[in-house]
Amino acid sequence: MQFIDLRSDTMTQPTMEMRTAMATAPVGDDVYGEDPTVNRLEAEMAARLGKEAGLFVASGTMGNLGSILAHAGRGDEMILGDLAHTFLYEAGGAAALGGIHPHPIHNAPDGSLPLDEIKAAIREDDVHFPPTRLICLENTHNRCGGYPLSPEYCDAVGELAHSRGIAVHLDGARLFNAAVALGVDPHDLTRSVDSVMVCLSKGLGAPVGSVVCGTREFIAQARRMRKIVGGGMRQAGIIAAAGLYALEHHIDRLADDHENAARLAAGISAIEGLELGPDRAPGQEVKTNLVYFRITRPDIDAATLTTRLHARGVLGHPIGPGANQMRLATHLNVTTADIDAAITALRSAVSET
Image (tube, rainbow, N blue to C red; front, side, top):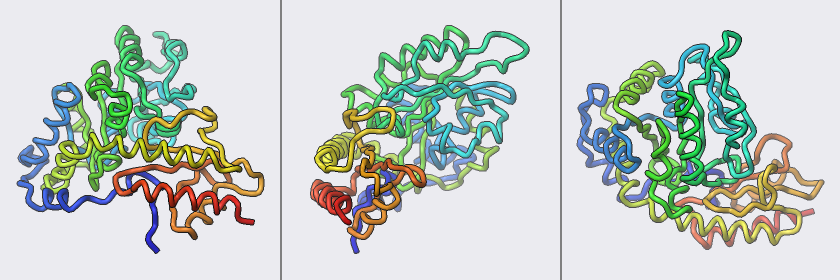
């Protein structure tokens, strides 16, 4: 059976043109700083985001972890959202490896951290408290329905943080989705943060890798942290070439994924027994490529619906065991015809008795 895979935008397959770019990429030893393709990717991403330098890493989790370790140390504290990827899905790496204390506050329905709550969370200079060193944002925000944070909001957080001597790291795994959805330059979303991580292996369609960007001084420290966690790579230009190809060819087409997600959301909203929106934002408009919905029929949970969809050739992502919430993600290997087929499969799966 040929499946329509909507579990995640990490399911993308490299195009033949991307594979050709990978096969023909000039390479060297990146640990020595001698891989020309890696160097070009790092410089290109940094330029697009308005930063001085970049660092190619194996994954988004590695990029976030290395950035946090570069900003803060043992006994320091970072403020982040209670639904942030860095808090929920990165194995507690900052605490386990860096001794950095997480201070989660509630994400608003759009994924933002309310400014007044950030202010309240910043520690006073008191021997009883861990010093606040870092604020982490996420754009787009995965668990809040793929919402994009606006440039104005990012600027406000940066201004608040810097006025208190605190750094800001942006988990920009889907940053280009945010920029395309908002119709802004990516630099508008990163100008007020001290570091940013962007995934190449999600909507951009590369098979592996992420890039961290910041000042040259920060990147030098992040490079050391990459080495500590075992992330030094050798002839990495073979995979960096896919990232370069993605930057040059796959950004504008993210709008197609957003259109397909909106189409999918409209179809879901018309199915009795399903309701759009994460638990904290019922009915919120789908703005990028992530579609969250709840199952309102009491006799069906997410695991059951996932099994029924699988039998109909559609792969989806349940949110937690026994839960009633699911996420579907559109990407470059999903067509409008696939979306229509998925809607039909959902309607049939929900009505199955």
